[in-house]
Length: 146
Image (cartoon, rainbow, N blue to C red; front, side, top):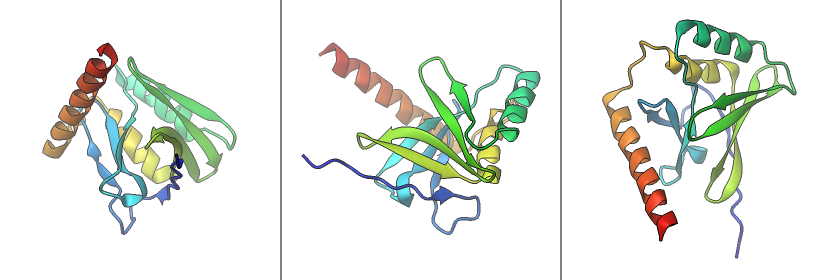
């Protein structure tokens, strides 16, 4: 069996190729791996319960130094942000049964994290992405019971 090998580019807000599918109501960032429409992953994003918590999380992210990391803990999932250099951050997830590091510049990841703001509302298309995530969870639960 041939193992998958995915390389992810460094995502920027001004990229020519569309890589961000959207952000769902639960703050998952839907990313097209290598801008491929057929390989879309949902990265768990930052969730906070107050503005003070958000300010602390953003301060922690903005103060990361190369080699440091920051965990985004959620009830059902988590991920880690790795600071690679002063303007390069990685989030590792599994895509197509292989680990993939999604690289972001500071401005892009900062913008994604800002969707944790309590007053933020997703676009109508984000609601559909949330439904997809729910269906995936239900399919996994059903498959594990079989």
